[in-house]
Image: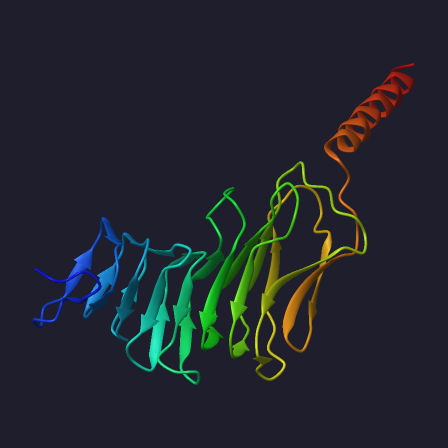
Length: 241
């Protein structure tokens, strides 16, 4: 038996480990995975999970607060969903997380917002995405990157229907040591109700969403719709007359 806090290894006998279900990593110490192919869910609840560059993720990798995933080799790849409020650490400060999938800080969907931390560089490849959620109040999800960030892919933003934004408000959604070149997202997708209220501002060490058009409260929308319906009805009656 391994002592508490010891090192565990999976997939080190030359074969490939395929996970199509749920693999849970918890407890003290660290587990290092070789030849891990994940199409299901890898849930890192506590402790640390080390991944080699042959790690293939087309499923979900979730890292809870206080837990850590680290790269054993120079490149750490993600082609699936990377989510949570824990920490991703590359092999060194100059090593990168190569993301061609989706990064969703905090909880997936309508859960609480939160911050996902990356120690190292980030490379957002073509077809990748960063998904940012708002709650009914307070700050948005945030991705905190310790070193350089090369942006690309799509920024998707969602807020619940009861969230009220005020013109001029701003929300930091990502921080980083430096933005590589003049890299930007290739597209912005607003997933909330109504029109997109935000403009994206790229600063030296962060990306900020600024509210440029206020989102009306749900009651305002209801009044507008009721008024529009009444006006349409009046116009129809006049035409018939």
